Amino acid sequence: MQKQYIIRRFDPKDLDHVVKLNWVFLPENYPSFFFLENYTHWPEAFLVAESAGEIVGYVMCRVEEKYYRFSPVKLGHVLSIAVEKKHRRQGIATALMKGAEEGLVGTYGVDVIYLEVRVSNEPAISLYKKLDYKILGVMPSYYSDGENGYLMVKSTSERADDHLIRAVLGYRVRR
Ligand code: ACO
Ligand code: ZN
Image 1 (tube, rainbow, N blue to C red):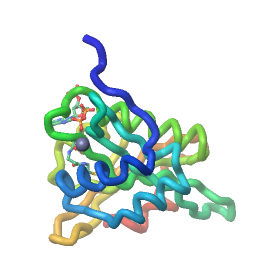
Image 2: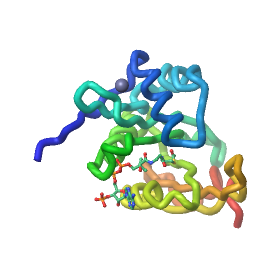
Image 3: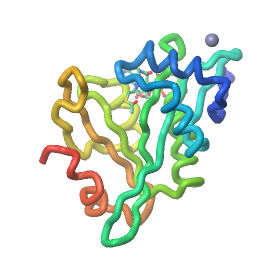
Image 4: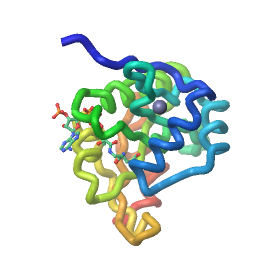
């Protein structure tokens, strides 16, 4: 079967559709300017999936910087991803994540990619595990309703070993 969707960069004309998908499918919502700001800084890591002219999914990321042994470490942060219900289990989130990783690593040179996810969000956790993300630990009551979050990480450079990852992100999880 042919793929029924394309993955492309977000464009400001997609804003309303992306904001709406975020509202409908996630409890964590952001104002429009936040989406535009991330797009402005990191356009190669903000992608949408389009099917028959409709936006059916998005992934939005940002790049952050920390220091490890006096040298900067770049972190790719997957802020938000969602796929329209009718279009799930067709590999769209996988394709969005792989595209975002290409932008984060290939264009922005991040050493490690991380994300937060609700401990109850089995679909998302399985997606990330399939893409080689590991649970670094639990963030107690991370969400506004009190639910715990997992911090999940993936090394994308040789220098980002377990020690570096713990040094730059370990403070966020319970040990
Ligand atoms: N149950 C179990 N495993 C699942 C499920 C599910 N419902 N959905 C996906 N997976 C796993 C499977 O291993 C799947 O591979 P398979 O279909 O070959 O078995 C793999 O993930 C890849 O699935 P995709 O088809 O690429 O994922 P999809 O396009 O369906 O989107 C997503 C997954 C984004 C989690 C979707 O369910 C969604 O939009 N959920 C609501 C929003 C959400 O929870 N977003 C993540 C929040 S965390 C964050 O944003 C950083
Ligand atoms: Zn529409």
